[in-house]
Length: 108
Image (cartoon, rainbow, N blue to C red; front, side, top):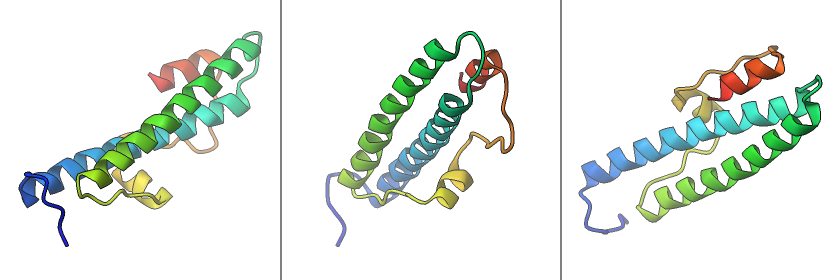
């Protein structure tokens, strides 16, 4: 049964697609941020370690809000790693452990 919230089926699907893309992007960004939290080294370790942690905590809340908003509008929230990777505009960088400055640049 479709939820009638005053949005046409076509527009509802378009909105869901946009929100799923946003969740995918945010999840890839979350994963990169957690990776950098675990792997940052150097003189700025303590500050960046804490900074990355605060960032991934914020991203976790954003991901949850957007996915739940999608569901409240009648969409289905994509929620597998394969879907996130396939739907994201951001790209993974496996086996890459950049310096701290590059980590920050990669997250922008």
